Length: 210
Image 1: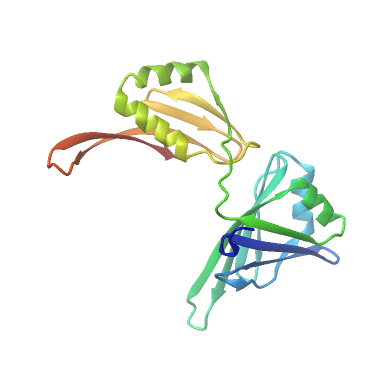
Image 2: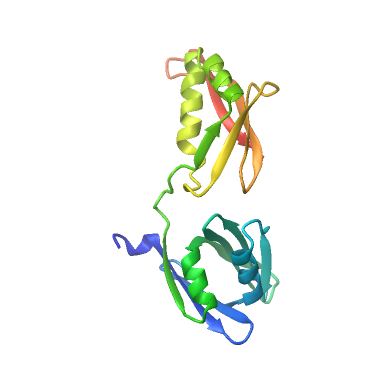
């Protein structure tokens, strides 16, 4: 563990008979209040690879759970409401490998450490034949080529369990993509910027639209 501040500690304990108690700890927020997950929701995600997202709530806070191949992804939103009805809180994102979830459902307590600075590897990118043709066509322009390279450098860090299929989309002079979590477009934008020398230059960039 190189930096304690970059870690979130997650603990899950069976809470008989139908719940799992989830708590977190990080250096900025301290220990969270206990969030009770319904055991049947975890079982549904484990038993069905095609299960959709499940949303669960507990005393104003909520968690969104979804399955990505052999991992369960959690978006935990911990909220607090004061006497003036003002709400504040924070969000934790973490993933549990399926073997840990199986152990949890069999009655064992689970400890997990999520490292916030560990960037996940790229998803499996499958570019169709038409997509390759579009890449060759638009990369004839130097600025567009560099813009597209920057886009793929900075996006789709979803882990190797995720598979994306990329198609050409002539309407946006770019691409559309489809994966387990969402579909959307990779859209080309062009603008004019002023350099330090006062001259104007073309700026090309790609953005994700969902």
